[in-house]
Length: 597
Image (cartoon, rainbow, N blue to C red; front, side, top):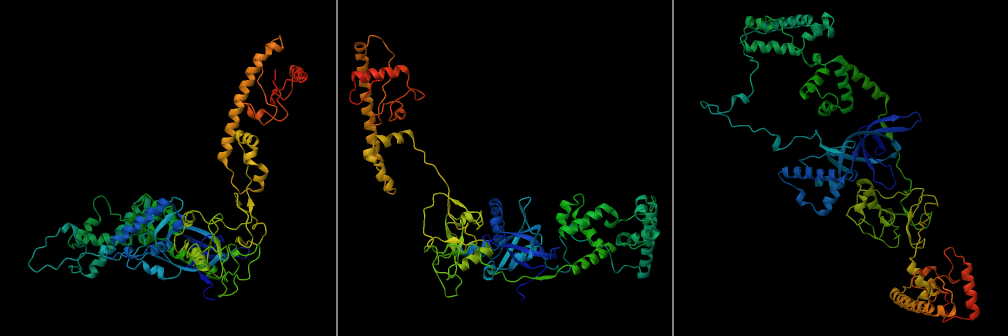
């Protein structure tokens, strides 16, 4: 019951994806929506895998500097496995808030500021324990050191000098030492000091009455008297007494010089109403982070002025009123919420059959199986597990055992580095969504041997293939016709896995082309010689074309089709028809070639 009860201030795991690691957040508020659901306003923490590579190098440099400053560095004593797992425990705090459904909480964890006096190895010994030392700004993409570190160690200790022997002189620089501002053994009595302070308050009230700006801020006499009774007036009066060696007459003359009474103001009077409103807004957003308040809201104010105003502001009625309002709001908000344990099956569980989990999955602590064709766990390399989970890109088909899967979900990495972890550090594994992922040219495998992601729908378990087109070159198309005896297309189609001797095909194709070129040249010369004897009329010479594919011409080889050559548009002219008829009647056909005159 207590483990499932979550309160404000708890560090918890949130799940936003079934395959991604958990999000680590700190609960700031628990609000109930109009629909009756509970939403948690949380502070975001980021892992190393969530920030850029340049910022990771900066974080490693900062950690190395901190390790070098220690008296007994322990980083060199850690093994490679411990260093690898220690990176999974490092987080980065941010000032970013977000609202998440409380039903997505998956458990509690512990996050602490990196303690320099504690051994780093102690974080590995504790379960669900993380640490942080830097603040990450997701909008500006910057890393800054956290201001809340505990200053423990020799760097923050004062060097106390030895006590001087009586009679020896002090050689130290007196200007660097503290200056006495009040002597408790002064000759004045307490009554005389109180009377002088009353006179100082009266002078301060009169000075505010003469000042135009003060009369606007404090229009009544009571407000002016209250402002004159603040600590700044009393400090000025006691400092005046000390500077004049506690001489009352001399100190009174200084309180009211020739130019008029002295007006002493503190930060409460110096700040305007708009500046006070901006300060309250910044305090609501950043808390007591005065550096951020000055940088984002009040850059014209000094850090000393802001801190002084804060502690004076806490003494006002405005602070008491806001404190009461916040207490009333806290009473109306939820202080805790009960979230039952999440027991739904993960879509990344590997099943033995399509769409239905195998009976050995979750059958008990002693039920082990080796689903996935005998592949080992990607992290611990074990071959047996009560349940397997698909992990990584789908084309790699990696899997994790139960313990390594929980380690991945909590710490965002594997126990040991693997071949698939490099891309996983930057890109999360592909979740099992409703739309299928396309894979290029994946061979068919049996459903009993291929692990399928069980997402509850048959569509997600289908293996779709991307269509592709093999476009042959012209020379390849020609080789299919010229080298039919070598290729044997029907036989090669029945045996697609038997390799084809490409060297023999190239040699045969080259020989056929050379023979075709020499035969065509001979036929052209013969036609030129016999043309004047057969016909007295001269005709324009035409290039010889082949009647079939067995002996193609040397140029425009692919244009020679089995039905004989035609014109540019596949049509025969009248001259071509008349020439063909004459040759057919005379019977002039030599070696299968028909001269086209």
